[in-house]
Length: 552
Image: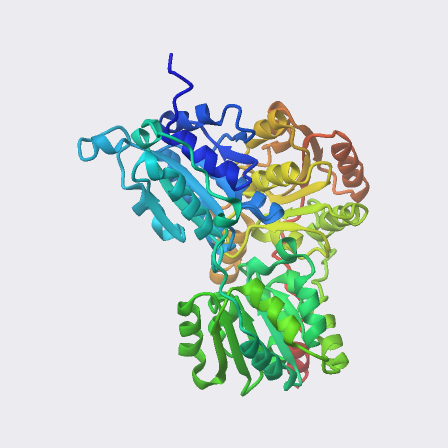
C-alpha cells in the first residue's frame, strides 16, 4: 500500500486548486489521473464523475458561467482527451474560463511507445487559449496557477494542461500553494482619457449602439450592461449565438444595426456573427470604436473597416465597460432611439398554427417560459438546432446557458447538471431537440447519482431538423433524406431507466404538456419530458424594413 503521508505532484496540484477556491472538479476517471483522485481525498473538493469526457468539459463550462469561478475538468489521456476536445471548442467560442486537465504518459517513457503516448498539447492547442505539458512535480503547482490565470486573462477561455503520470507521482518536498490574489490575472484597463474619448464619440451620435461578446452576458456580469446602457443612453447588446445578427433571442437586431450611426465593439469579435462587418453593420457611413483585449481582433476590424474605425484600444471587456460607465457623464436624451431599438429587439417570430403531428415549438416554449417567470433566478439551458432556437428566443430575465457561438449541440444535459449543482434549490429547465438528446443520454445516471435536479424538455420531431431544413432550402423538398429518426425512440423511458423521472407527451395538447411539466418539476430530481412537436424551421423574426421594401 502506498504511503499516503508522502507529498507528490498530485498533492501540489490539489493544493493550488484549493487556493483558487475550486469546489468541484468534473471528471471521468482513467489510469493516469488516479493519483489526482487519491490526492483529492479529504481536500474538500468534490468530484462529479461523468459518463463521457465531453460532459465533464460542458459541466465545467456551465459551472464557470454560473459561479464566476474557473471551471475545472479532469480527464484521462488518449481517447479521454480526444473525447473532451469537442466540448473544449464550445468553451473557447463562449469565452468561458475552463481548466482542462488531462492525464498523460510518463515523461520518463517519452519516445518509447508508452501507453497512450500522444502529443496532447498539440491536440488541444487549436481549441484552447493555451495548451502545455507539465514539466515536473516541483513546478506543477506554479504551472496550474499560471493556467488558472490564463483562463481568466483578456478574452476568457479554456486552457489545457497535460499531466504526465510521473509528474503526478514524483515526490515534492513541501506544498507551497499560491496566495489567492496571485491567481488572478493582471487587468488591461481602459484609461480615463480613452474612456472619455469613446464616451464622447458615442454621445455625438444620433443612434449609437454597443455590441459585446459572450463574456459580458448578464448571466456572468449581472446588470453591468444595463448600467452602461443607462449611462450612455445607447442600446448595449450581448451577442452569444451562432445565429449572429439573426439571433431570434435579439429579435430584429439587424434592423437596429442597420440604423446605428456609431457602433462600439466592446470585446465583441468581428467575425461571421457580425456579418464580417458588412452592409448589415451600421448605417451608410457609420463609424466604429473597437475595445478588445486582443490586438488581432482590432487588426481584423481595421482590415474590414479602414478609417471608419475612429477609436481602437486594447483593454479587457469588463473593466472597460466599468470605465465607460464612469466616464459617460450626463446621458444624451435618446428616448426615441431607445424605444425604436427596444421594440425591434423585443419582436419575436409568430407561431404558425397550421399543421398536425404535435405541438408547435412556440407552444412548448411558452409553457416552460410561464414556469420560469414564476421562479425568479431560475436557470434556462438551451441547446442548438431548430427547437433550440425557439427556446433561446424565449423572454427570460434570469440566467441562461446556451450552446454558444460554436454552434455545437449536445451539451444541454451536462449544462443542466452543472447548473443544478451551482444553483441548488433553483429551478433549472433544459430545452433540447431529439437529435441533441442522444449525445449525452447516459448523463441522466450522473444526474441521479449526484443529486442534480432539473427538467429536460425534448422537442421531438423525429428529425435532425436543422439539416432537414437545409435540404429543403438548398436542394428542394423532394430531395430530403438521411435526416430522419425513429418515432419509436422513447428518451423519457431511457432517462427513467437511468434514474430520472420520465414523461411522454404525444397527443399535441397544451394541457397535457403542462401537467407533465408539473409532475416533472415535483419529482425533485432529474426529469425528462419528451414532447412530440411539429418539424418547423427555426424562428425568423419579421422585419419591418423588409415589409416596407416589399411594398415599394
